[in-house]
Length: 132
Image 1: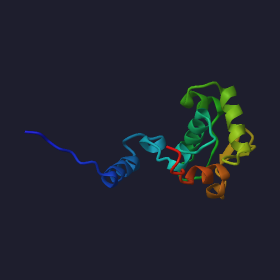
Image 2: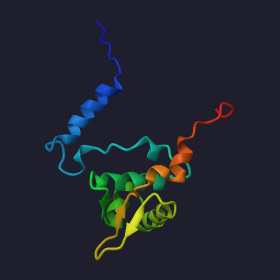
Image 3: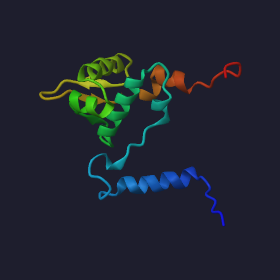
Image 4: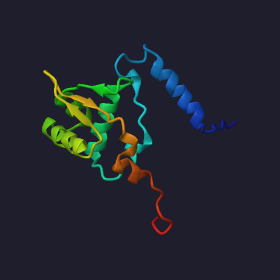
């Protein structure tokens, strides 16, 4: 007797959404982070820039701002705090992250016009049929 499983993206997303809302799964970050495909497939970003952007997104949750230390981000991403600092400033130069100065740590924001960012727009453009 063989059991067949059908893949259902909708069912998977619904299940993961329910798990994310369960406070018993984990207290911090709700167990996982749902990341827009635009971040994963954004051309012109280094691997560290993508990982840092995703980590900031995880800290932000529904608040659209966060203030983790460079050391916390470095620990999560797997690099030095100096590398994190360099790449966060690169993300700021690319207008993908806004940096606010606070007394303790910097505060990081996503711009309101992120959907108009050239890096995001360039990544959404369909590839020509000659490039495969």
